[in-house]
Image 1 (cartoon, one colour):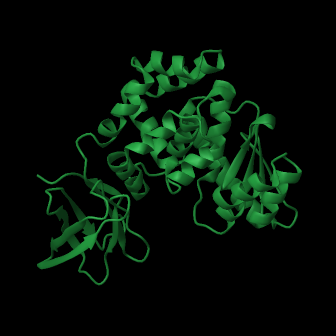
Image 2 (spheres, rainbow, N blue to C red; image 1 turned 90 degrees about the horizontal axis):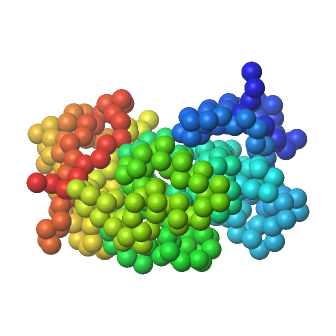
Length: 333
């Protein structure tokens, strides 16, 4: 059976570890192929380095990055797509010292995008697609900050319109530019459908300018798409709550998003004959993160978050059920 990718590792890596990583790589390559509806006919090479230091050294000595850029990428990035040789270099710390990493999905999406569009694809579209495809749970709590940024920081829209480097944009947004770009691609896909997004990339690959390809496909100027993005992304859920799936320790992480920056919020949790009430303050993006679970009794609960200025959200959830999946609740009535 033909492979979708070729994995290369350092000789110091054990066979057992390499085989386990290869199984993850095969699964993730399949996810990327399914998203784009086509296989990797020419398998891209995936180079896995065991440490941040060896990753940085390889970027500089083997792949032509400057020492400063290699060092920056080794600190900020789990991997890099090597467009010139149609390959991927992976920082092993994002795979070896973590849980189930999705970095392979992210970087292989870049390979697929560039094979369709060439190198003209805008960075925000490239990174937004890669971030969206790597999602294993579309209702995961990692979306909370991106949505809050769209609701609270008009300046964040600069990532779609100016020509600063992607690394600079990501630094300006505290590492959250990827999430903001993913929300833009999510809105785009919801509006025109995935086949049209792929056809748009193919038009870029055939020589159309990115702006022309996007505007023709969207049916509106790119500037309007960007200006309308916050309202479309938040839609009927300007404030909301994400709750994680049940963790092995029985806890569920929750994030209230879309609230005013550093605002005081009243939180209540009701269920199983109990009433909990406390106040919290949202962070610099308008998000608050908390946990629910042990020692609370198992059963159904309602979590509500309100502010003195009228913002509110609520969600019904279960505690003590290991089968609980991630959820999203929106503005309370």
